[in-house]
Structure formats: structure tokens, C-alpha cells
Image (tube, rainbow, N blue to C red; front, top):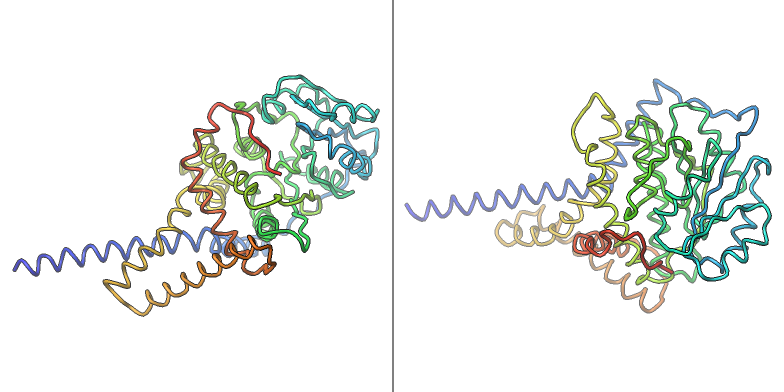
Amino acid sequence: GLGDVYKRQAMHFVNAFEILFWICIFLVFYTFIGYGLFLYFLVKIKEIFRKPLPRTEPKDWPEVTLFIAAYNEEAIVEAKMDNCLQLNYPPHQLKILWITDGSNDKTNEKLAQYPQVTVYHIPQRKGKTAALNRGIQFVKTPFVIYTDANTMLNKEAVREMVKEFSDSRVGCVAGEKRIAVDEKDQAAAGGEGFYWTYESKLKEWDSRLYSAVGAAGELFAIRTSLFEKMPEDTLLDDFILSMRIAQKGYKIAYCKSAYALEKGSADIQNEEKRKIRIAAGGLQSIKRLGNLLIPNPFHLGTLRFQYISHRVLRWSVTPVALFLLPFLNIALVVVYPKPIYIILLILQMLFYLAAFSGALLQQKKIKIKVLFIPYYFLFMNINVLKAFFSQHKYKGKGTWEKAQ
């Protein structure tokens, strides 16, 4: 009868909810935990049959350019230059280049005190990507190392990165980013520090499997001949530049023995601005690296798998799935109260309660780091959703307000 028809339709509706719920569960688990576990397993299997070759020191250290694009960095110039001059690399082989486009503070005056430095400046501020495009013409060395003005490198960083280029298949070397976290830091720094610890491990495993998926602008190196100019409104210049090199068939090596140390954002408001811009840059990158979304197991198949698993899912569908889950879960508990759905709903509510507690505590400057992790996790994913509606703010623009 008519009642049976309604029951069947209702069951179809419930089944569709169940399928969507489990798809969302899979996406969230795979993106943030499962991929790491699977990657670790693949690396171990690979290295049973093929041990990684050790990187060798060159007989003669090649010339290298340390490239620093800076805008109004007078407060950090001395510290950065002290750090550069302490790097353990033959001084006559290390060129230090600053591109200071648009700087109108005392950055250039302070740099003029260092005879070891070459500075190229124009008064117009067009943004970091434009500075990279303009500055490459002044690089005459076979390798260029990019680093930010506000990051400090370990003494062996340049040597360790140059060693990676002993493999002719390596076109880019990604250094490790570390966040300096002390007891007075808030959730922005504490959460980011934990995130980058996990992210660094994923990058290492990616590199050991085939190639790291992009490089962080705090510290990375390329073969100068592989530089490819980018549109000036590129938000993630480091990621696009390194992935363009990977698209050419070169590998991005991950060098954890070369690291850049920097402070986390001053507060959660500054971190929010930064995360939204990065997420908007991620969405922009997905469009500009569109060819890597086309399935092709015979050409860069492993890189495609890594790129989609490590980056694309995080910047697109998984945050949507994450925030759909509690609503789907509640609906299933109401209409189909299986014990598994009740347990999963309780676990979700406990996770959100921990995140909410972390949010309250960081406002009161109370330090319980374990609660900052769920808070920062949700915070990052919320900002990905915000980025969907913020892309227009960056369209055609190469500059933005710096986060403190």
C-alpha cells in the first residue's frame, strides 16, 4: 500500500545518509591519519627492496645564492644577517641576495652596512611573487636557496641542501620548517608547532617514497635553470614553483637536516588571516596545477597520488566532510539509532568539547597544550571553508597584509 511506498522511500533516504556519512568518515580519517599510515607502510616496503642512496659531498662546493625577498624588515635585518654569516659554507661560494621591492623603512640602510650583500630594490611594491620573478635575473649560480627574512637557519643548512643535488633527479630541495614554541605562546604557536611536527614527518615519508609534495618558503632550494616565472597574484609561490619543477619529472627531496626556525603567529587573529590566505592559495594552486588531477598511472602516477592525498583533499572536500559529519551523525541517531552511530556521536561531541575548551582557555591565556590540538585542528579546517568565500579578495593581487 501507500504506507509501504513511504517506508521504502524513507529507507532509501536513510541508506543515502548512511553512505554519505561513511564516505565523510573515510575522507576525514584518510586525509589526516590514514594517508600517513599508508605512506609509512609503502615506504617500509619500498626500502626493503631498495635502500636509499647516501648523499655525497661534492669535491668542490658549488656557488650558491641565498635569496631573500623582504618587505619592511628593518627589525630583523641584523639578526638575519648574523645568521647568514654564521652558515658553514665557503664564504666565496655563497652569494647573499636581497630583493627589497617597496620597502620604505630602514631595511636598505641597514643592509648597506654589509659588504657581503647584494641588494636590488625598486620603490614599487608588487608582492613576493613579483620579487621572485624579478630577482631570478640576478642569480648567476647553479643553485639558489630561498629563505624568509624572519627565519633563522641552522649552520649546516646550505651544505646539507647542496648534498641532495648530488642526485641528478632532484630539482628542488625542501628544508624543514620548525616553530619556536615557548611557555608563553598561545594556541596559534602551540597548535602550529604540533601541526608542523606531523607535517614534517609526512614530507619526509613522501620524499622517501618518491617526492615531497611542495616546499615551504621558509627554506627551499632549486636548480636555478628550472625556475619558471609565475603569475604575480600567486599566493603560494613556494608551492607552485616547487610543484612546477616536479611536473617536469624532477623530484623534490626533503632535507630534515636543513631547517628554518621561526616564531608562530602573535595571536589567533593573525594566524587566522594567514591560514585563510594559505587555504585560498591552496584552492588557487589546485586550479593552476590542474594537469596533476588527470589520472595517468604511466606519467607521474606516484606524484599524482601523493599530491591528491596530501594536498588536494585537505584544501577542498575533506573540510566540508568534517563539518557535515556531526549533522549526519545526529540525523542517523534520530532515525536509525544503532550503537555504532551513538558511540561515534559521543566521540565527536567530546572532541568538539575539547576544542571549545581550548578556545576558551587560549582567550584567558591558560596553557593546556593538549586542548590546543583539537582547537587548532578545527580552526585550520574552518579557515579552509572561509577561504572558499575569500578567494576574490586576492584575485589579481600580489600583496597582502603580513601576519605578525
